[in-house]
Length: 325
Image (tube, rainbow, N blue to C red):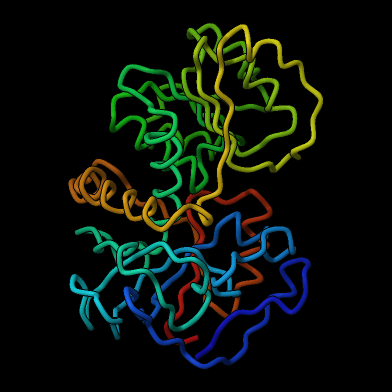
């Protein structure tokens, strides 16, 4: 099969198209002929040598896929050859075939194309586990989302609104801000022209904040938070080393947390998959949540996809299509 490998740690140019034997499913796994795979922030980190694959995982990039089941391992009863699925992988998505834990597969939501479905698992697993299981976002609370037009952000806006929160999104320029409005954000802030801290404070502060920026945003988020707020850090686009005053964390009783999904226990990911299928997939099928695909590239152009991801100018999910590579 064709795969994308990392020739050495570095920029997008280190991604190389190579041939490898196709894998075989072990007990509890399914083998999927990949239609598409999502491009995500952890892929950038792994390519740079900063986010190694955990023991036993594929060394290939790709944490989410969609495609057709071609074989099942021992003990798998729900899925069979010919089924169309999307799912969260532990690596290996940048390939023509990928093995995946059968419990981490989900059906393709009605009305969603097989290609677009590849952009669902990583983002929805991440947002659901951090915002709804971890931070316990509730109806009526104010949810501040940074980078609202990106893959994580667009999912946060829609899930927040679907479950009754008031959503404030930050982004720039206006084209990205407009997408946030189109997705249902109650207030959109262009962070280059407006101080989000002051705006959020005038709205009573944020109960839950999701940040992918880091850097100066870390202290600003603490200032924008309401008492008893929960701040979730999922990435550090502007850096992870800062000097801040932590006194407000104590005075406001804040919870500041972060996580990575890949190293979560198998049983936890299974729980998230089943909750998504029961509570979120029906919203997608009813048209209440849009699948936002920004751009697709053939697998062989993975380097171009990574370059676009790192330019931070895209909206929605970036996908690699595998058929015909």
